Length: 255
Image (cartoon, rainbow, N blue to C red; front, top):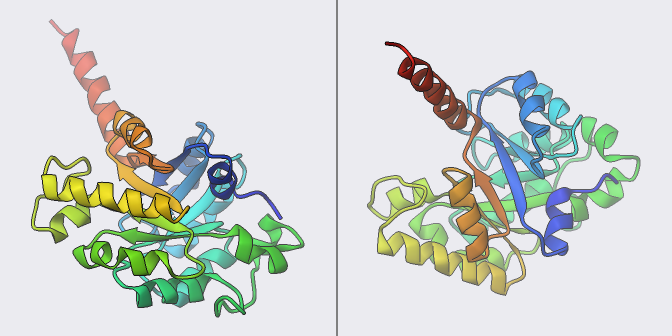
């Protein structure tokens, strides 16, 4: 089966740089995935993306060395199974707040006897290889998003669920859940302490600790803290920033 960069790099003790796609475009997905990201996530929760567009984007990412992942809109087994059948090699599932949520996520992502994923891999088989049916359980990455106070409080139980490969911290929603403004790199001591503790607990279990970051500098800081997988901003935010800077630079030369 095709190698999953997330699993491989984690096993090698190397950081994973993850791209984030919120703009529904196969061309943009291909362009971004060619920039050296280890994995690229198609965001179907907050991104402007439906299933048919997501399929095209997964195909585009698959033409590069990056490993394709998907964030579904919610913990919906049918939706998750469909994205896996479409060739996603991992799921970053939002709003996992309890061990029961984590078990439901695993059930949707893993074939029996570990889970209850329905068989019919379609493009997953085409992309993954002929041994997909017997190798998918060990190859697909399953990350539970920790972005609520309840998720943080239940983290030990979530990490104990068989089939969960790790977590992905959503700092904005975690800040909101704790009563603060949504900020990726929060200055609030309560939020910072929760993120640090989540990192410590996840590393202690030998599982993947991922987090969303505002930019490359913030991602580098998170790697130095010990996070395994970092996302240095999403396509829309980075595009807005770069285009704004280009306009400002252009106007600076106008007399």
